[in-house]
Amino acid sequence: MSSLQRDVIVVGSGLSALLTANYLSEHMNVIIFTKSSKNDNNSFLAQGGVACAIEHTDSWQLHYEDTMAAGCYHNEEDAVELLTKCGPGELQAFIQNGMQFDRDGLGEYSLGMEGAHSKRRILHAGGDQTGKELMEWLQSRLSEKVLMVEHETVIKLHVQNDQCCGVQTFNSNGERTDYFADKVILATGGAGSLFPYTSNNESITGMALSLAYQAGATLTDLEFMQFHPTMLCIDGKAVGLVSEAVRGEGAFLQNGKAHRFMENVHPFKDLAPRDVVSRAIFQELDQGEKVYLNISKVKQFQTRFPAITKLCTKNGIDLKTNLIPVVPGAHFYMGGIYTNVHGETSLKGLYAVGEAACNGVHGANRLASNSLLETIVFSKTLADHLLKESHYVLWHKTSIEKMDKDLLQYRAVPLPSKEEIQLMMMKHAGIVRHKEGLVELKEWLKLFQPYCKAMPQLTDILGIDEIETIHMLQLCYLITEAALQRKESRGAHFRSDFPVAKESWRQVRILHVQKDGSAMRREKGIDEYNHAARDAASFL
Image 1 (cartoon, rainbow, N blue to C red):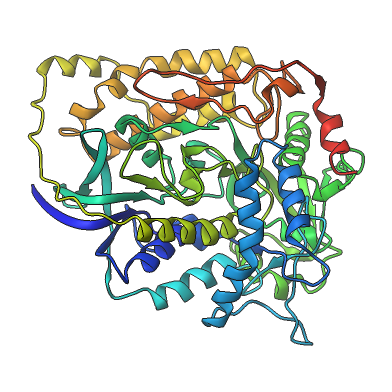
Image 2: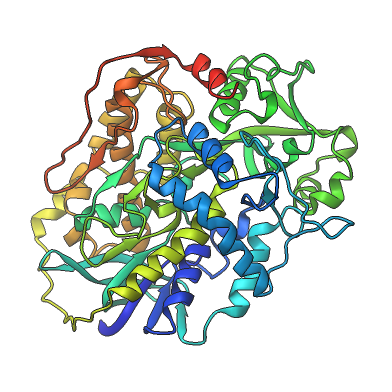
C-alpha cells in the first residue's frame, strides 16, 4: 500500500467532476478518481437538455417559479435564485468557448418544452444527446494538469482531527492506495441503481453518500428519489430512458385500451410534474394495464430523437406502430450530502457537488432538465469558493486499526445480492410507500446493520463487491428511516397511508448524522390538503 499527496481529490467522472477539476486546475494539483471508465456516468446518458431562461420572452423569475412549484416549495430559495439567475451567463460562456447547441433553420436556438415548465427553454444538442455532446466537448478541453485515474474506486474517506484529509482507493488489481489532500470533492452522482428499474448507469449506487455518512458528514432529503415516468420497457425490464422531451414535442401516454389516462389527472396532462405522471403510470400498471407512449403527433421523430430511435430499434420496437412501451424508473436523487451553495459539507475539508450533493435547489421533486444546469452553476460556485479560501495542509498516513477477529461473527448473516436489495427497495420504498412495507424493509435491512457498524475495519479486508453492497445497505437503511419519519406526501415521496401534504413539513429537512443519529424537523401548525389537489392547484 502506498500513499501520495495532492492538493485536491475529485471523486467521479461526470460533468460536475470534470468542470470542478478544470476550474481548479489552473491553480491546484488535481486528481480525479472514477470507479469505472470516464464515460460510465449519468452525464453521458442525459438526453433532454439544459433548462435555461435565455429567450427574450422568458426570465429567470419564471424559471425560478417553475422550479419552486415543481419542488413543492421544499426548495432552498437562495439556491434556486442562484441557479436560475446565473444559468444564462454560464451557458453563454460555454457557447463562446465552442459548445454548440441545436438551432433551427433560422439560426435560432431550438428550445424544447418539458414537463412543469411554463416556457420552451430547454437547450439541447445532438437532438437527444445533450449529455454526451457536453461531456465530449468538456473532455476535449480538460486541462492537461488534471490527472484522471479510471477503474479505481474510493472505498474510504480519511479523517484526522474532525477534518477530511484524503481517500483510500481500491483498483482492479486489488491494490489499496492512500491519497492525502487538503480538499476532497465528491461528484459521484446519485443512487438510482438502488432500484431495479433505473435510467442511471449501473455504477451509480450511492456509495459516496454512505462513505460521507461514515466519515461524519450530514445527509439530508434521502426520502426524495425521483422516478422518471418513461423508461423503455422490454419483457418486464427497463432498458433505457425515453426523454421527457418526447412528450414536450407532442407524444402522449395511453394504456393498452388506448385510454389517455393523464387527461383528467392534472391540468398539464402528459407534461405534469414527474412524480404525478409516475404515480399515474404506476396505478395503470398496478391494475394490470400496459402503458405506451404514443409518438404519432411528434414531427420527424427519428431526426429529432436519434438516440431514442436507436434504442428502440436495438430492442425490436417497430416505430411505425407509434407506440413505445414504458415503465417508471429511478432517475434523479434530490437527497444527498448536505451542503450549502458553495458545496461545503458539515465535515471540514469535504465538499460535494452535483447530484451527490443536496443544497436544496430541487426541493421534493426536480424540475426537468435542471440537473445539467445544476452541475454547470454549482461546479463554478464551488471552484470559485475554493480558490478564494485556499490553504494547504500536509497530511500524513496514520496507523491503521488492526482487524478485530470478533468482527468475523458479523458475517453470520450472509450479505444479500445487489439484485435482492434492488427488488426490496422497489417493493417497499419505490413510487408508492406505506408504513407496513417500510417497516418490513427496515427490519430486513436491520439484519445487515452489524456490517455497516463494522465498516471501518471490514473495509480493510473485504473485496470491492462486498464493500459496495454494505454501503448500499447503509444508504437504503437511512432512506427507509427518512421515508418512515416523513408522515406526509410531498413531491417524489408518496405515502399511501398519508396521502396529503402537511404545512408543518414544508421545507423541513430530515438530517442524518452518524455521530448522534439525530433527525431534525420543525413543527408548525398543521394544515393538510389532498396531494392530488395540491399538484393541480399549484399549476393553475
